[in-house]
Image 1 (spheres, rainbow, N blue to C red):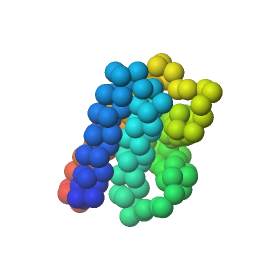
Image 2 (tube, rainbow, N blue to C red):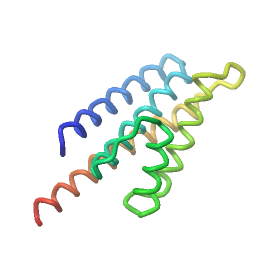
Image 3 (spheres, one colour):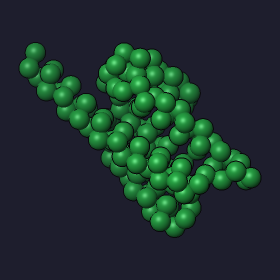
Image 4 (tube, helix red, strand yellow):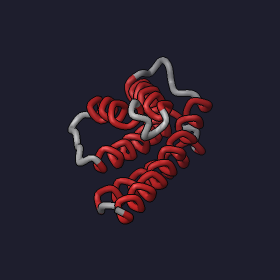
Length: 133
């Protein structure tokens, strides 16, 4: 793994931890936001494997879907989770009348954990394949 990918995984793990802390304090909107960023950082890890970086969230989300979900490199649900989580993050960050619920926040945190574990395994497998060639 490249140093930048490792740094993003560490950042994602810290973001996950922050979302869990915020969740325990009943700060669901903010926990949802950190869970989204956990997934976002992991999407960037995948894109870096192909040498891709983007300056907008929508470009990261879209390209992650095109390059990884549509091609079967990751389960299609991962792209859907990322899209849904981005929408809930926006709702939690900017809307005042429809807060993110406890259940929604918990689901986002669980999915962000799966994102991290999947990325770590995928990169490990990818590294092993490259070293065998």
